Image (cartoon, rainbow, N blue to C red; front, side, top):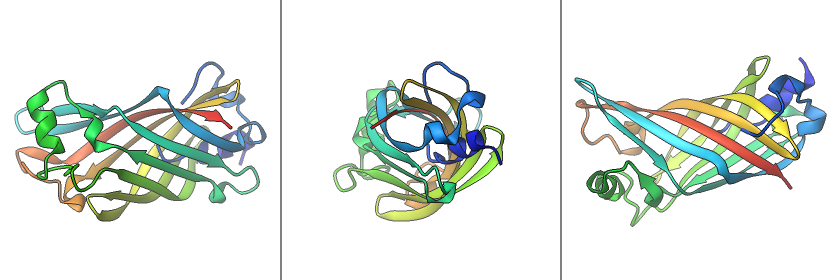
Length: 192
């Protein structure tokens, strides 16, 4: 197992400027990174019968990535998303998503992901498993991570995964709207 691959695996929970993933060695990547809102994004899509569907993003989130150079399994990812920052480009839908029918932001102001394991899947890829908590419900979720680069104390990852809305009592509108939420995320972290 190459050290650069271990560097990828360390962040499986949920990307950066310049450099290539193959040039990153674990000894270079080891450390703690704060996720920067600049260069990071959390986007989602929910399919709909007959086409269309719903696309959106969260504008506010924070997190840390701690890459353990000695033991990749001890690396950690912590992400907090603020559902009040959800945006679809349609104010009526945004208000519905924030209501007690979906995110219930008045009573549940955060969605939290805490990693529990990291497993390498390829040269520059891994799967991060962790506990996702939303609306007071917690379930184990998996996300695929691809290291995109590292340069100047910053590291960049692409993260994707699918989550069932029903696990968090947010499945209003099914089966017309899919129970599956597809996430497409970019994370840039700065060492420090």
